Length: 502
Image (cartoon, rainbow, N blue to C red; front, side, top):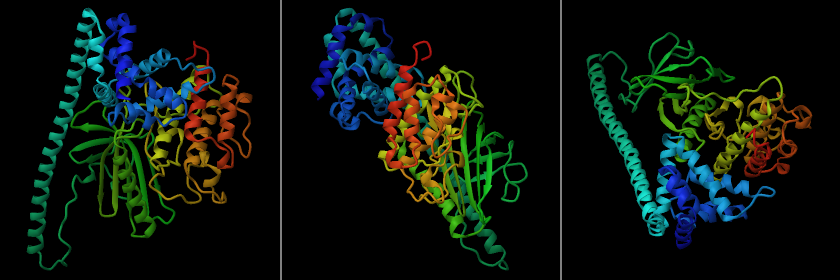
């Protein structure tokens, strides 16, 4: 399919010379890459697998957020009355890609690199230059030069970060060696002290630095400073949570944090710690589960919508996990989580929510294909970006084996309840997304066994969306749509709203 991708790029250059001549480097990249991806979106809309179709065009160049963009467009093409005209599909893809690239940040850097690799794979740059006239050729050359320079700058930045991390690693190892030497001297000096196992410092220790209550007896509260390696973070009071296991053998703590040393404005994180106060099997399993989530996040890499793993450490019976928290580009504060209002939302707010949850379903569908299920979704666990996209705060119960009684009370699926009798899995995530959507759209929790129709409470919500949510809230998991189907229905609801609302 490589030759087809080249032809699609050349055809766009021939058909849209004026549009390309007026376009910025980002717009040019989005339009030409959209041309090469048009057959992928059309094939996926017809029932084909995006990954297979994308590999046919891009080889190993396409992955991550690019796959999500193509899946989103393919879902829209499956909607009633949706056109599959190649030029129209290309324009939809180009608009989605350009919007993502304009956002900036690491996701845009990754996507730009993928699109550049895609064009290289299909020989699209050469095809574009060859098909262009003299004036357009000069503009395209300037655009590709600009994009290559930006990509080199981003890559150099990553190399600098990697070099700095290696430098810090060497420094920590020297510190660890000095600490071990001091500990050895103390043991030799004090022969009356019972011999203990040799000191083995853990790489990048995580300790509380300042403020009373650092240990299990004191607890966490807003204003405490927490050291993570050589960085210091301040605990925020909102979203801070501390809970003990039923047998008081383990304490679970979590809080949003902001970096204060080294000074780095708009650097936020989500810090979680599990400490086994007693060596019971349950407490040690809780520590291991946080480590398991760290492993899953590391494997997920840079998948769009999944939090970025910043640091994980395990020291004895304590595990600490730090992930990134997105910042608002317009206000310079941490992005907010979703919150329910007392009554039904406005039509505009409903549309924004439908679009955000549709994208979230795409993220969950990708995780499900990887064998990962969240099973702990709540509004407070969904972070809303400036453009309305939703990203996961963490992976919930993904690293814990399903057991009766798990899950958030207000959004707990029937199969999660102690007398549910079912097995929690991918359909549990579908139920929880629907329960969140129902609550945020109507202002009421979904009642059981049959929720009140959405339109009876929130008449601005498209009727098809209400019917789909009721299906997704069915007590029988087999009657629910999968995450991809739910996402497509929510996206169609967004598409059906008046143009002035979207």
